[in-house]
Image (cartoon, rainbow, N blue to C red; front, side, top):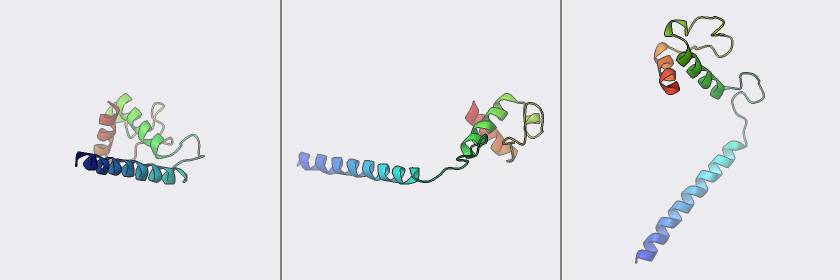
Amino acid sequence: MMSSLLDGHLTKIVLVVLVATVVRWCVSLNSHSGQGKPPMFGDYEAQRHWMEITVNLPPKEWYFNSSANDLQYWGLDYPPLTAYHSWLCGM
């Protein structure tokens, strides 16, 4: 009785891992945001840069162009609540 329960549980685990692997493989066949477009490289780089801006600059400088905050390079373009979320993620 116990052996059949373990076999059923193991089968479910193997099936979930297999499905997850196939989904990741299928997704990996496609391009990603910013692929081949240096130096901006897409959404991941934008999120990383916004965290850097919000952690290293005072809030009054988040939305203004300066030598420390080049708005042409992934300038923070979302409302302040989103900026504070980036700040929290960067802490």
